[in-house]
Image (cartoon, rainbow, N blue to C red; front, top):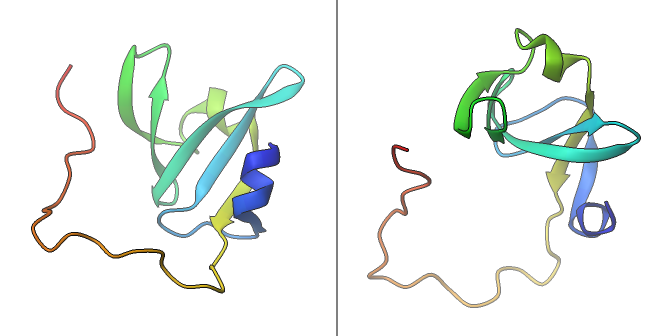
Amino acid sequence: MEIVERHFEKADSPLPGDLALFRYGRTISHGSIVIAWPQIIHAYITAGAVVIDDAIANQDLVRRLVGFWRLRQSRQGVRGKASETSGPRQVFSGF
């Protein structure tokens, strides 16, 4: 959680790209990226893959939801710049 708190700030309502964190047991131990709430992408052990899921319809996730975190804006701006030749990256492929 220390890394999350260093680079993210707590958000009241989720926006695309925010983290949604979940508690399993006594600690926050699962995270996802919000696509468009309640749609998230995450690696889910019961599926054995990276999945797009509905966090509200999934009762296991909804009862474990701790909250949302948004990437802090850097005061220094972007370090470096993206390569002009780099194209979009594939997030995941079929398993």
